[in-house]
Length: 108
Image (cartoon, rainbow, N blue to C red; front, side):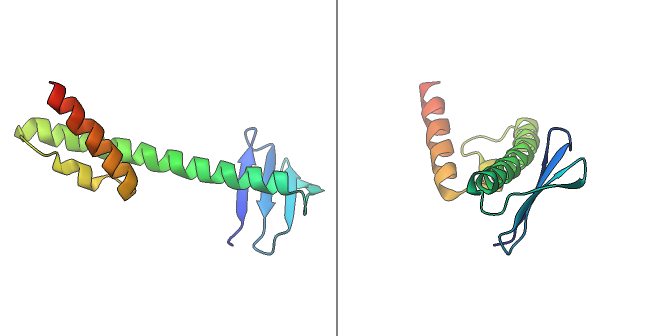
């Protein structure tokens, strides 16, 4: 377990969970509360960090999609969209995406 360091409310509060499991909250950068043992705060901090990481990954994927689509349009590629392989997604997400894409193409 690596720990979490996440700020909320424009930096007013920072939740820091050390690898040892101790959890504390800073308010305006100064020690405010020791919330070690309060699993809801630690859990929320982890969930928020994971969500922010996922959002960042999806934003980066959007940039890859835009660039790949532009390359496809510029080169008039036909058939399979090879740019899908460049996307940072799991195999399951890739399968769902390609199935939906192919179904939409079949309707056109």
